[in-house]
Structure formats: structure tokens, C-alpha cells
Image (spheres, one colour):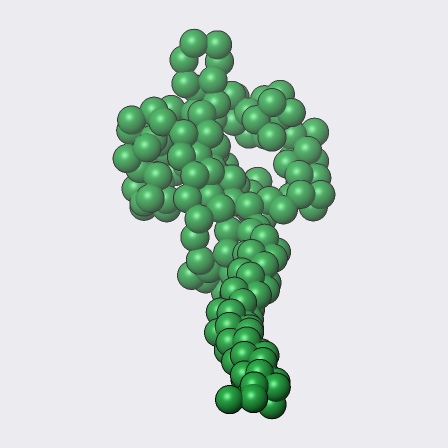
Length: 171
């Protein structure tokens, strides 16, 4: 996303996005699993929200008020990803939020936070772990049953051998 939007640096600087940029951002939301994003300037002030393209947010809220989890990473100039569970109605049940720097060569021009729906992956993970748990449970049940069966079979063979020897022994 940060490589495909040409005026991302200017948006981080506080300029309004072009119509082409808005179309690209909306296309990214429709095609992928991106459900929201926010662009902050280098100082950590909100300049654009995915649901408020027409508002000028150049004097917007600081990152500490909107994305508290990312404030330390932003101050340390480090990218970061966290997995979150929905706290608001309308959000996916599970999503990953990623903080990515917007650079203009050497310097950081701003920050992009992208929220990606992970509900499908979480459901697949839950299904997979459930299947693995069932298989492990069956193996834990099968091992003693097979051990008991093997021991009972050995005992029956030994008893049969003793009985056969007892019939043929003339003492």
C-alpha cells in the first residue's frame, strides 16, 4: 500500500489526497482484507483516516489518543504489528494492526497504520488446532487400549500353550 500510493508522503505532510489516491486506497480496502487505515505525520498527528477522506486532519489527534499501543513504537521509529480482538461493533472479530513508516529516502515523512482482518485465519487456526487435539486425544486413548489388547492376546496364547502341554504331558 505504501509503495502503490504516490502521494502518501504529501498526505502525511497534511495535504488532501487526490481522487486517484482515494480510489487506490478504497480499492485496497475492497480487494484485500484491509478494513481500515490511518496516516500520521512524522510527529505522530493524524492526517487521514480511511473513513474520513474529505476532512482536513492536519491538526489531528496525536497517536496516543487513537492508537495507544503504537505510541511507543512510533516514538522509537520502529515498525510494529499487534494482533487485536474487536472492541467496537463493526470491526472484525480478530485483526492485525501494523505500523509502517512512510519514508522519503532517508527521513521518515509519516506513519501508516493498517488494520487487516484476521478472522478467517483465526477460524482456520481454531479448526486446525481442534482437529489436532482430537487426533492427539484419540492416540492417547488408543495407546492403552492397544496395550491392553496386546497383553490379553499374549496371555491367551500362553494359556493355550500351557493347556496343550498339560494334555500331552504324561507325568
